[in-house]
Image (tube, rainbow, N blue to C red; front, side, top):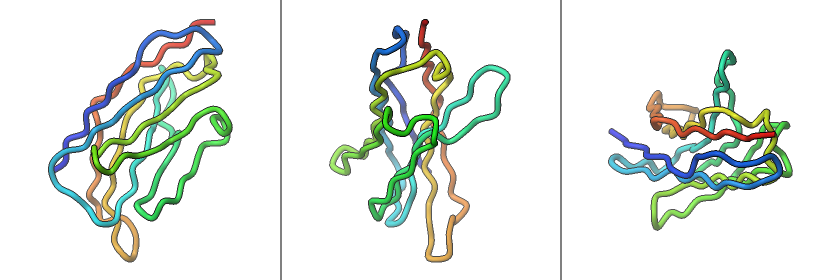
Length: 121
């Protein structure tokens, strides 16, 4: 199995920055996607940013130009640098890892425990 441990959440003023980290341990995958999702109170969980093992990256329109996802394979860690934070970015942020096969997801799907990000206006 895989364990994902997130850190870096907290309280920040609007316009500020935070960096989230997610460190993976356990089983490894040659093909995978790692991503950050968030869930605000009363709303569904939504994808924020994703990174594939081939280096592809995608962002939700709401965070393009403000958030940056990156990874450090030597540390099995993925980061989410969040700049120009807005009150609407307030949510619990979750790290996700999915194993990928040649034909798509393998069904291996792992989540971190979540970290709270609160942006005060």
